[in-house]
Image (cartoon, rainbow, N blue to C red):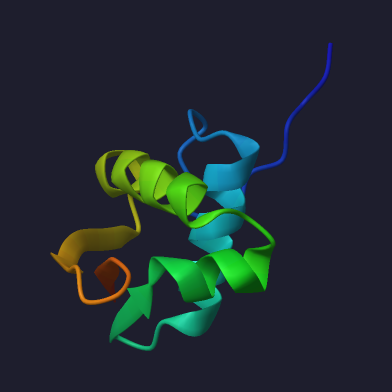
Length: 84
């Protein structure tokens, strides 16, 4: 039997990429922050498509982040707010 570690506030249903993304956003966001998919992808060595897919899932599953798709200028922008 193995026990999987999860970050504080993280849903146990998140996959590894979603957890990585959640940790990144928690580290980088200060209150309300805006992130472009392509810049997150560059920082985490992921594709923009993977970031977009996982951000949508994380928006529904995260208990600590409020994530909203914000814009499409050059790359998708996400508004991220840490919930208290």
